[in-house]
Length: 287
Length: 248
Image 1 (cartoon, rainbow over the protein chains, first blue to last red):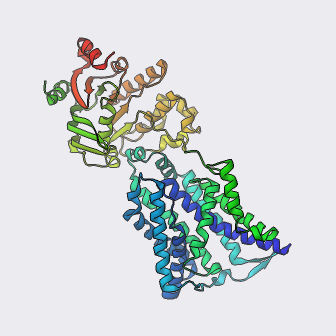
Image 2 (tube, rainbow over the protein chains, first blue to last red; image 1 turned 135 degrees about the horizontal axis):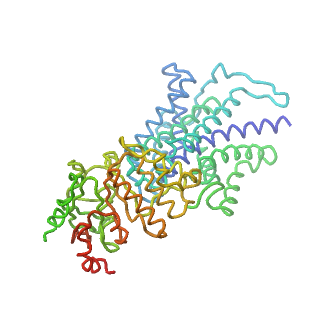
Image 3 (cartoon, rainbow over the protein chains, first blue to last red; image 1 turned 90 degrees about the vertical axis):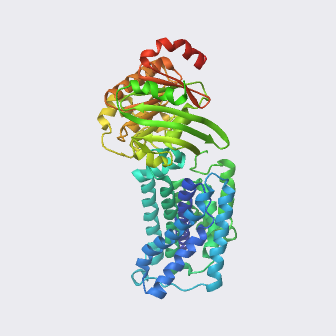
């Protein structure tokens, strides 16, 4: 039974990363109509920035949680201003190819300087150790990742679904020309939204650093699963991405316990089934 | 009569100061050349209607003023300020508001969010209680999804949301299209009341019987040019010509 709970926890942690990453992808797809294949590389950059902050500047994990998403978010905004904005109105394929190329370049540069093996990043002192819950042992850092990710996801959902800024974002997703004709600077809003989505990926990277080590290909391993999560949840759906992210993490964890051979493919099998039954995803709207 | 003379002649008869001055406006959709040198003026506080057949260039004229068309040349002056090169968000912030023909109600927003979406660009916008007085239906349906409203209610919402912003110059593109006569009447009353409150309105209409209840002046658009212009007082005298222009 302990093993089942342990796998459930691992599933929840993976689900946290899936949710944060797919949420960023959903925000970017919803607003920019770009399938951001660079998302995994930007997640990796978040972890590396945290590593540099600690090793070069002595800046600890807590500050890294704030600074790394801002730095990587600014990098993302530069990418959007210099490259992605020119793809407006073109077929999805162009955005996909461009961001895939960016991912390969970024990963290649980091691999060239840091190799493929992982760099260590210590768990902060405040989150070391664990708690015996009676039915299982809970490492505190892992519990923190799940709770913090959930809070960030819900805060992002609230921002987009319940605030005036979110109303601008949703309206601009539907009809950017008209929203701009109301006096809102839509190009600037799109740049900031890309920065937000990228910042969420970087945040996931910082959270992941103490668990998975800091590796140039850490994002490449994850991004394919995250795309499956986004497709299952419904492209562009905010709540769909959050719920599907956590749910698929748990399903993956349970599969590891009951039928480990299928644990790497269960997400993709589910994706095929969802696409067969509901091509727009579980919570997606038809175009 | 030369094109610019058509533009200026009836405008001079009107009372308020010149608020919009358009000279030699040309516009393109991709490779298609739609406007071929539009000239007309609008004075403060009046309702000016652009009449013309489908595809004549009326909507393109409004979109060109608003800056939401790919390529445009010529001169558009608003309050003596050249806006031909300004982006649409800057034009909106100068006090021009646009209500599109397709209404542009956002399906992912409820009625309240749709209503509150356009930012207030300057003082002088109508407060919500006055808006609900004009359109009581909207108050009852604030929590409904915007696109679940009837066609008439969507049109009211599309007009209502630009009244909040403080824009003094409103461009309404076919606000009566596809609506029941009782709703058309209500929109007519609303436009008349807005005029009384000092708004300047540029209206695009195919229904000149409706337009005649609110307009001070008319311009007729054909093949991307203004081919005629007259005041409401001269409408009866121009009726035969108008029937020919509009093919009715």
